[in-house]
Structure formats: C-alpha cells, structure tokens
Image 1 (cartoon, rainbow over the protein chains, first blue to last red):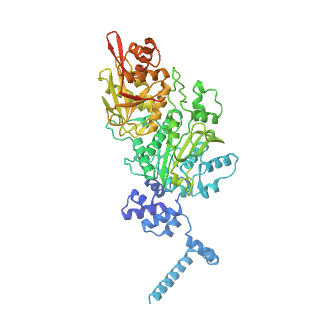
Image 2 (cartoon, helix red, strand yellow):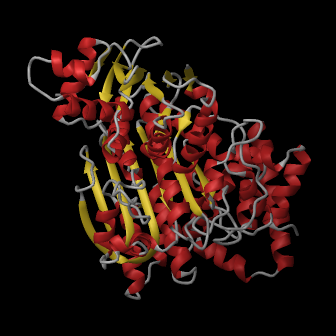
Image 3 (spheres, rainbow over the protein chains, first blue to last red):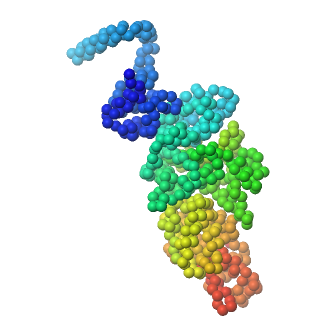
Amino acid sequence: MKTFGEKVRAIRHEKGWSLRDLAEKVGVGFTYLSRVENERLNFGDYPSDALIHRLADALEADEDELLILAKRVPERIRKRVLQRPDVFGALAECDDKTLDRFMTEIGRTLKARKVAKKQ
Amino acid sequence: MNGWLTAEQVEHIQWAVQRNRPVGEFVKDLRHATLPALMEYGCLRASMGPTAIPTLPAAIIESPLGQSLDEIPSRIGLHDSQNHNEKPSRVDIRTSEFFSISTQDELDSESPDLTPTPWQLYAIRFSRSAQAAGFNATVANGLVAALYEMAHNAVEHAESPCPALVGFQAENGVALFCVGDLGRGLLASLRTCSDYAHLTKHDEAIATALQEGVTRYGRKRDGSPQSGVGFRQVFRALTDFNGHLRFRSGDYCLEMLGSDFGPNLGEFRGLPLLPGFQVTVCCRTRANSSGDHPDV
Amino acid sequence: MIVPMAATFGKHLQGKLPGKKHFAKLCEVLSNVPPNSIVFLDFKDVEIVTGSWVNAVFAPFFHWAGDDQIDLFPVICNLADKHWVDEFALVADWTHKCFLVADGPIPAKRAKAIGPLDPGQKITLDAVIEFGAVTGAELERQWKPEAIRATAWNNRLRDLYDKRLIRRERRGREQVYSPVLKEIDFDG
C-alpha cells in the first residue's frame, strides 16, 4: 500500500505536473511540498488538514483516502462514529473476512438504492 | 488575540520554559504568527534547543508567512537544510520575504556587469511591496535604507555563529521588517570599545547604542564620530507615521509605540536572557493605525 | 563640471563601505578637473541617501577637494528628500565643514550653506557676497558696519576658503576671494 507522500506524488505524476506546478496550486513552496511527499516535515510526517484538503482538490483525489493515509480520521466518519458507537464498536471486533462480506452487502444495497432513485 | 503568536507571546513562552512549565499544548493550538514572532521564536528555538521549544504547528508553517520563511534555510528559521533554491531574480511584489545574510560583501558588492545582486533585488522587492501596501516611494525607500542599516549592523558587529535573518512584510497599509541574529548582543559589542567599557547592563547598552555617533569603533582622533547613524535612519523612516519599534538585546527589550521615535524615548521591559540582537520596525499608514490583527 | 550621482554610483547611496568605494571613484572622476573649478554633484534620480554613506564620502571628499593641488568647490544639487539635507547637516556638524546645497537647474546660481558658521564667518561671507570679489585689505577699508583689521578679515576669509564656500585667486601679492555662487543663504 502506498504511503501518503507516495500517493500524492503518484497522482501528481499522472497529471504530468512538476512539484512547482502543484505547489503553486495549493499555495505552498515547492521545497515544502517536496518534504510533504517525502514525509520529512520537521513537525511530523504529515501536513495540516487544510493542506490535505487543498491537495485533494487540486489533484481531484479522494480526500478521505488522503486523510486516512495521513493517519487522520475524516470528519464525516468521525461524526458518524460518535453518532453510532455501537455499530463501529461491533465492526472493530470483526475480522477482515467478515468486513469484506459486509462491504459486498453494503455495495449491493447502495447500488440498489441508486437504481431506485433513478426510477 | 486568540491563536496568534506575537513577539510578546514568545517572551511568555520563554518565561514558561525557564520555569519548567509545559508549553506544547499552547504552541499546538496556535494558528497564526506575526513576522517578528516567527523571528523571535526561531532565535529562541536555536538558542534553547528543539527539545525545550516545540516546532510550530502546521497551520503556521503552511501560512503564506510561514512558507516565505520555509524558503530560506536558516538556524533562526524553520529549518537549516539547504533547499538548492535559486534566489529569485524578479522584482515582483510580495507580502513577505526573508533573506539570510552572513557577510558585508553580500550587502555591498556590485556585479561587474552591473546586474542587481540578490540583496539589491530583495531591497527592490521590499520597496515595491511597501509601495503596493500604501506607502509612497520616498517612505518605502526610507524603510529600505533603515533595513540596510540594521542588516549591516548585524553582519558588522554581531559576530553571530550563524547568518543573520532579515524579513519584511508589506500589505494593507502596514510595512515592517525584522533583523535578527544570535551574536554577542549590544552590550558585549559596545564594551569592546574603551569608551563603553563602563557599561554593565543590557538596557544601558541599548540606550547608548541608539544615540547618534555611538559605535564600537569609538571616535576619530579629532573627537568626531566614526559613524553610528544607523538607528537615526530607523527613527527617520517612521516620521509622520503610526508605528512600533522594538529592540531586543540580552535581558531587555525597548519598545516605542505611536508616532514619536527617537534615541531617548520608549519603555524598557526586562526579559529572560536571549543571545543576539533583534530589531523590529513596523510602519502603519494612518488609515490602518489599529488593524484587525497584530503585526508585532 | 557636473557629476550625475545616480548614473555614476547607483540610485541607492547607503552604507559606509560602499561610501568609501564611492569616495575613491569620485576622486577619480574629478581628477582631471582644473583647480578652482565648481563641481555640481547632481542627486537627481537618486532614491536613497543615508547618513553613513554621506559620512563615508563627504567627510574625506571635502578634505581632498581642499588640497591646494586639487582646489575644487563642490555644490550638492537636487536632494529630493529634506531628510537627506539633515544627514548632510549632521555630517557637517561632526566634521566642522559646510556644504553648499542647491535645487533646480544646473549650473545653480543660488545655494544654502549647511553647517556651522560662527558669527565672524557669517559676516565675512555676507561681505564677500556683497562685494563679489574682495581682499582682506579692501574689506578693512570698505566694510562700514564694524572696524575689523585686515589680518582678522584674512583669517576669516581663509576659514571660508577652507570650508569651500569662497574661491581664491592670486592678484599680485594679494589673495582675492569671491563667492562660489552669486547667492548663498545661511541660517542666522
């Protein structure tokens, strides 16, 4: 699995952007961005939530994915956990196989809902 | 102001650390910093060490001011690893910019083909930025001249173990600059001259240094001053403006606020000891005499 | 002779070390100017002038200009900022010199003397301006307001000549003094 920095770099390369290009879009210096991608920031490995949000916007990437790679819990997930601690507590006890079965079921349910909405 | 790191807050942090009080949570919650605060914090961290003084939070480092400082490797800045950044060769307007300076040559040299040197370009950017912030060319150039004098003092007198750091900020009716070093401070510098060997306290040294004609080189044989007009340029730059001057050396700080600036004005405040000398010159147009956030 | 300061030294005239270099260059630029000439130092287009630069250039420059072999009379022209005039005044105080400062087209016809002049020197300068060209002996004969001996006049004339405010030409056994510019103002 890619690290946060590797993910940012990979998406940046896909878009054909240099460090300077992306740095300008998100409002930081390119040397700082280089340290972000190499996870060599002086205050820790990952930048602020605000910068992660701007990176996700600029790179058209999944913000939740970037946040989780940066070992942060996305706000909407955090809120839901607090709303339904019973559910998330139970999920935390499940093994990966059980969680995969849940994901398949959730996927089917969401798809069915979308179809129903269209109709 | 909530979430702001000011120069005075840095003093409180230093007091707290010296009394073994934790400062980590306070620092973590900071969201903004003034330029003088960044400079002071850098001096504090360089002097007391990264274990005692935490790194600043991402919110500050990723701000436009923080990113300006991040461009410059400096022991007083956010990091001192070489960036392999080229110094900018354009003179576009900026809201803030820093410059690391070690030698008089960097300030005074001229290129053989007369192209502007990095320092000259930096000075031009400051002047243009101050004009864009609302000051006329004469005032802007006066600030540039004052900045030059303070930077010159740092490289000529400080004997700092690392390059001095210079920073300017200019927007919305405010133009300010800071110069900071980790050298010997005013007291030790003046005491190298027999004329000032009697000085023993840092506040006396600051008060003496601000007088016209005072320099560690003493006087010429005919009694006339060798030099020592740098601070005059600073006072001159703030004539007719609302401003804030701050000089810090040793365990004292002298501040002048308002519209009267001169060698025998201002108020002293005792502080924990910090090596070097830090000067802040902040000039505000009348229209912006009380801004919505601190500048110093 | 006119020296365009911005074109010769740059628009930012600041600092002791650059001042020292500029002093040397100024001497070089003026090295072929005949003695007894007026030199107009034109500060048009200059953007910054600091006291440390003025001190580094003009303290030694006026000393050099006063050498018998050099004998030049500088006039400082078109200082854009009144604060720069203050810097010259400060250096004049320190060095007991006097600078002539003028505004407007060059060659200037009128200037202000910036720097300390004692009452006797002021009277003497007034008298030289009034008479146009004069010797000490003529002043003793013709200056009505007070009776002053020629020796005293000659001493004061010599002082003003050293301060580069009046020129001097030998006429037979006498020295004839004339003002550098037709009109010179001074305080007091």
